[in-house]
Image (tube, rainbow, N blue to C red):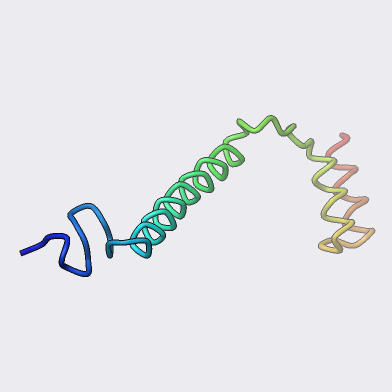
Length: 83
């Protein structure tokens, strides 16, 4: 029989009492945070967040700056893009 005498509390409470209320608040905060993160990642991935599209030349410059390609490769690819 569940009732006020049980330590886990009434239906709807995780553990009852102040501890149960804290656990419940933390649970729903984590759920809402997860939803927020999911929506923000989806928005970034689809371009909804207002970010500008990069040109191929800008991408090439970033790759060169990160050291992914050397100067010779950069010059060759840049020439290919410009022609």
